[in-house]
Each structure stands twice: as structure tokens, then as C-alpha cells.
Image (cartoon, rainbow, N blue to C red; front, side, top):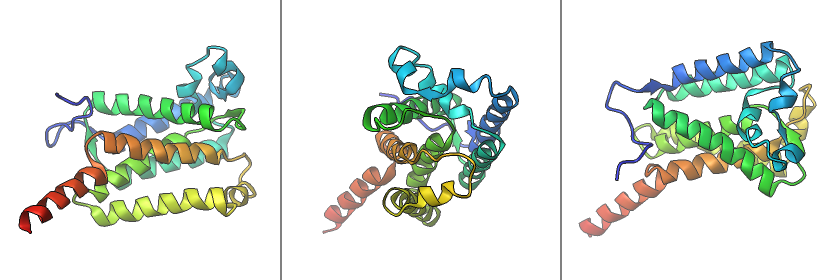
Length: 213
């Protein structure tokens, strides 16, 4: 069986830096289109349940205002340039669409208190968590493990220590920390499902030790 998430041959595929630039351009273009567009694309629970399923995906690309947009553009660019990976175009498009849908669906199912939201932070958390796990199990373990630990610590602090409320005091928009939790969960699950991540590395290491002993 050939996975649709198969990595491209060395030196081919789409670089994460280019993908980040493309995503940033989409976000900026939608932001420049004005505030009238956001209500048609944002996550709105009642409208999604009424059949407007596109909002599960489009809500990740519209923002509340310039500061919200700038923060997410900076974050997506940081992801692209920090990890600088290559992946086939088909694979990355499927992963983006699946991750965006899964993050929003997770909020829809598990976070009934969230009536509406918009912004890319949930999707960005999924991308960062997945990339960090892949590197932690590969040849850039220090970077991957460090970033993954920071992301997990951030999400924990938002949920248990009130970090989200503290961050909101400096921003001009509410922070949907539930989407961050869903994003990290989706990123890790998707990465392990791809056959990378700690599961495969741990299994291989266990098999080597068994053979040695």
C-alpha cells in the first residue's frame, strides 16, 4: 500500500517555507478583502450544524483584525522557516485540509462552549506539533523535542494556569485556547498515523534491543 502522505524524493516536493508564504498570502488577501467576508467564513456553531460545513476549513484563514492577522502570519512563517521540510504537493494539501477540518470538528464536538471563532492558531498548533514530532523521531531530535515540549507546556499553561487570559490582556481579541488543544492533538495523531513519530522510532528501538539481547 502506498500512503498519500508519502515523502517525495530527495530534493523535490514543496518546501514548508514556500507553503508558509502561500498560506500567509491567503490570510493577508482575505484580511484585505474587508470585514464583510469574515462572517461568511468564520466558525459559527449554529450555522455549521445547519449545514454550512465549509466553515470548518475557511474559519482558519480569516481574522478579527490587523493584530490578530499579524500574529498568525508571523507564526505560520516561523513554522515554515524553523522546520524547513519538503513534502509532495498532494500530501501537504491533504494534510492541511484534513488538519483544518479535524481541529474545527474537535472544537465542534468537544467544546460546546465555543459558539464562534476564527483565526489560524489551531491549524498552526497542528502543523507545529506534527513537524516537531517528526523531527524528534528523526535526525533533528534536539530541535523537535524542544519545540514539542514548549508547545505542550504552552497548551497546558493556557488550560491550567490561566495563560490564555493573561495573553488576552495584551491582545485586542479573545483567544480560543480550545482550538490550540485540538490542534496539538490533531497534529500528533496525524503524524503518528503517517508512520513517523515516536511510535515507529520506539518500536524500532525496542526491536533492536531485543535482537541485541
